View 1 (cartoon, helix red, strand yellow):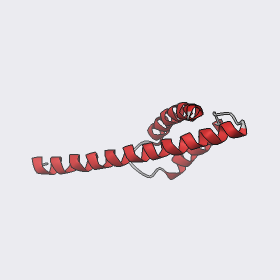
View 2: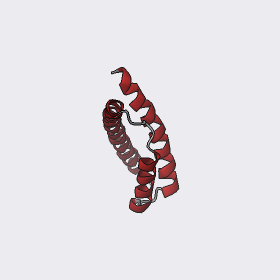
View 3: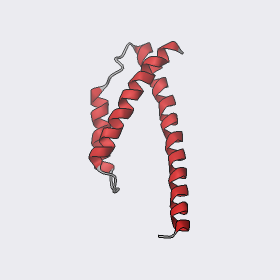
Length: 92
């Protein structure tokens, strides 16, 4: 691998990382709206059935080299952060 090819690949990773950040923030904005709706409806913030559905969907849809179990673990972290953001929507 040449130094130029390595730089090119790293730039590609940087671009993907920026896209991921944008998508995660987009998801967070929607999560905060969900939190507002749950508060208005008096619904619990934690929905373990919904989380399980997402984790199952990841297992069904994952076709990449990224291991399914790792993606599910990553989403577990996203769920925890999302719960915090939903609750934070109370203060908006």
